[in-house]
Length: 235
Image (cartoon, rainbow, N blue to C red; front, side, top):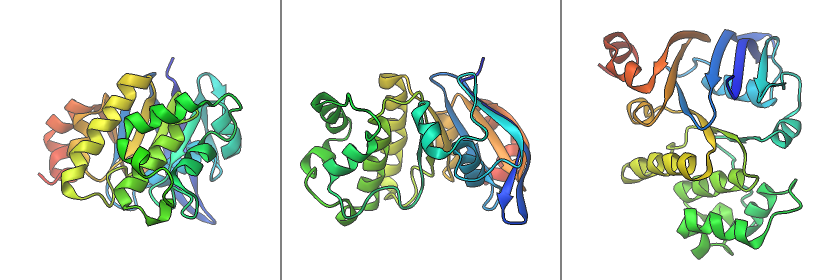
């Protein structure tokens, strides 16, 4: 049984239907990437899964539980966390306070949990008393990931983890995502514009276009596909 299953998801905003029956699966301890052109519905799918917008039709199950109609905070309590692309930290709070907010529903969070976050991203230890809003985009992304991991989730949804990063930091971000999966057994579902790099570290990938599934397969199969390469990977 897959850890996360989305079946026939239809959703959107107002009267605008963006997703027209999308299916995805994420297995335990897998990295899965969703790629596709701008406006394909990738971020909309993440929000529908996490309960930030309503699923008009279809079903989302997580670890065997139907979470289709749960609020985002209720989804978090089940062990699924979300890292949005923008506004993903509390800018007026310090790094340490942001980590505390990440663990807000866990009364058992300990100093060891903070030290684990600092070991994963050492720059956060150096800046733990700095206001998050004064950090670089890359540092804020590291903080957002660390905050999500404070609850030791089974799955994190990550929207554009390499967005805004300097080119020399992009490879490092993907390496860190692999390490997070390997060291914490946390599955990762990400939306990413750096499609080739993301697929190269992914167990599975999905291509969305115009709110519909176009291709699905292992990360390597999508990289090897001439059609996927020509249409979505720049040849």
